[in-house]
Amino acid sequence: MPRYKLVACCLLASAAGAMTRVRQDPGPLEPGRVRVQLTSLGSPSRVRLLPSEGSETIADGTKLDGYGPGRPIELSADGDRVRLGDRSVERAVVSGTLQEVLIERLRRLYPGSVAVTARAGRLQFQNECSLEEYVTGVLARECPASFHTEAQKALAIAARSYSYRKAYLSKQPLCDTVHCQAYEGLTRIPAVIADSVRETSGLCAWYDGQPIDAVYSADCGGYREANEDAWPGTRPIAYLRGGPDAPSPGATPFCDRGPKGLWNIRVPRSRLLTLVGKALAVPTVEILDITPGGAARRVRITSAGLAPMDLAPGVAPPAEVGMPSLFKLFRGDEWRRAIGASQLKSLKFQVKLVPDGVEIQGRGNGHGVGLCQFGAEGMARAGVSCEGILKHYFNGIELAPAFSPGAAPVPAASPGADPSPPP
Ligand SMILES: [Zn+2]
Ligand SMILES: [Zn+2]
Image 1 (cartoon, rainbow, N blue to C red):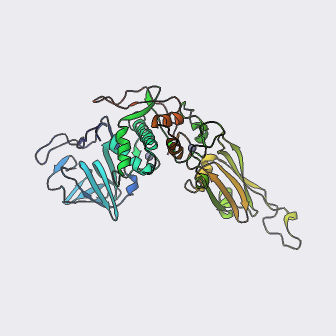
Image 2: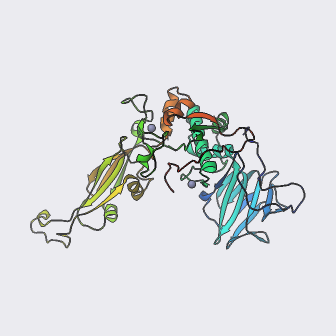
Image 3: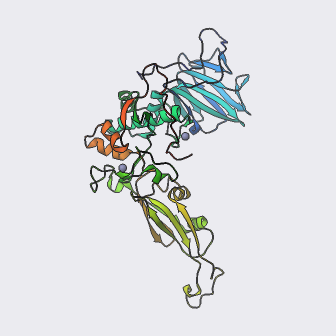
């Protein structure tokens, strides 16, 4: 990555000779670098690290000799400490160009450094690398390599802006799951993805003097949601407005994928009854209110108690006859969590009663705020540039480099609360 030359981990204060004492605390983040909690690695009790050429191993601030390429480092958790050979340490850091992490059958390659600590017999991992390396890893997981180059570049700039804001302005930890952005280091990076990051190197989308919280989702279902509609309680953000994801109102959306963009799930009656509380009769699900884009804002499940006249002649009345109706109200985001966000892909859906529950037919995938990935792909295929794509999804933004060479992170005014939903 040309813009930010690889700095062998900032922990390495000085160089030559064995047993160099260096600070154990990772210290403040240098411009152009990020730290990512590797929660997707789980919490194993042991790990193997294969250092790359020129790597260094630091245990509690002491540089260790005897580890390097071809010399795997075996680490295991021992309570809140890490066992490394016959040493018991608080924190072990392997740094260099590319570290291979092996946990049973899982294999990942991380640029920069990997720090290992332990908590209650389980290992925890943190990767520190350049922002550009991180964005490359994110784009490889978040953007299909088959996407048009301009769509890839737009998503690279969005991912960089989002990461910049979180790391430097909100100062929140980045994790490697879809909670922030999926990231598996530099494991299996398609060349076209690396090219798209390199061609946009350092560029962020800016609004009002700050890189933006450039949220994105897979498919907005044809209409972008305003942030306060998707995430009730967040303040409206000027660059995250709702609107048709189409060249003009009423035109075919950029993200229209025909039947591929539609989905269908069944929620069994037993699940609905668990959500509403016990009752015998068939529960109904109603959408009470929708956003301008057609996403459910409030959902109600009702389960009516049986009245004696509902019974067929001669049928003995069950105990539930005369029970009061039960209902429960959900905000859209609560409803999505209740059913499961991977099942209920978006809040743009319709409900149909079926004999054993309800059938939910929907379109779109994700929260629908900010950049729509399939829409970006549709725009790129229609000849729109990455800048045009970003200006369609983020109102009023400009593109500019995140850092001037050698400068500290932009000393922005207070970033305020970000519109993204809480964890
Ligand atoms: Zn996260
Ligand atoms: Zn869309």
